[in-house]
Length: 407
Image (cartoon, rainbow, N blue to C red; front, side):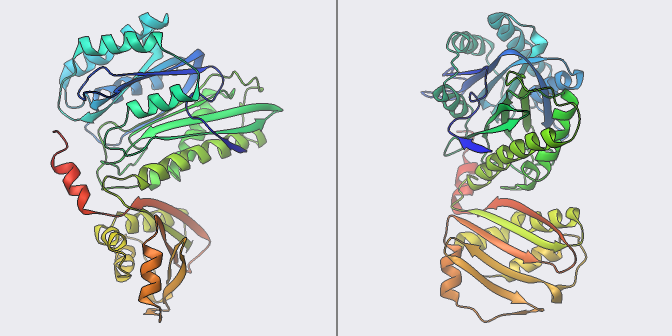
């Protein structure tokens, strides 16, 4: 497998476009369109929040039916969440209007929105934006990057990736883009993430592969403990790579899963590291757990702790906060049998073992905690299971950003 430059347009037969429709923002792109030249099999995962945005409801119904999908139209600025029946009418209008522009059916078009909850969308602005998008579709890397930037809200940087791999003697490409910076604490996926591939794979196995990939990637990140109303993860496969259709598990399925998980993990880490106001990506790597489930619970408990996140921001080795977060996770373990280390590009230092702190240099620990990526390494000494969770530090800017988000 090889990582290549590009994103959503890297796989064969995928185009993208972006435009400024002034949905809410002025002077910047805020609408994107992703299109496959041939119909795709599709798999999706959505927010576990009971309060689901209209686009989530629309997409869930299409994915459930298992029909081919040709396009995704997305906007930023307004989430189209908590908008009642009018919100669903907007989704139907977007799909129908996009379908008319592309010469496809409305139920072959997925919709996605992100932004302020509770605001209504302007139908005429959406139509004008879709018209512009439909005539500006390109298969270039720049078009993909532009589409990614158009769905950003408080994100500080675009998030995209592509990989090539060989399946059945054919070159297969998987590309992806996402946005996400705040209101991130997923159970099924997180924020908006779109993945394209030219692999030829059955809908059943694509769904299985996506769920497996999300479990250790998108399901293992948190920025602020809030699960969005709009979380949407979609993968489209158009089969243009020409490989024999993957219909059963085995070598070719495993190869595809490896590529998909690589893309998902990269995007998930990018979202965690770009959390609102964040200055560092904070990871917790749990090893030696008795079960994978418990390893995941322990790791997420650490990266979700506000006190631990503040510790990373302050570059202060207040390691008791990590142990505390492990202790209230709900997993039973022996505190006297836990080993804790901190690691970054500046080095690694062991600070706790056999129920007591070890001698260490506060200056060295501070340097380790000052890097852009910091990991807490926890060995539970209970078994062979492991898991890694991805989060970020908690800075003053998080409150500033969210205190005036609507303005």
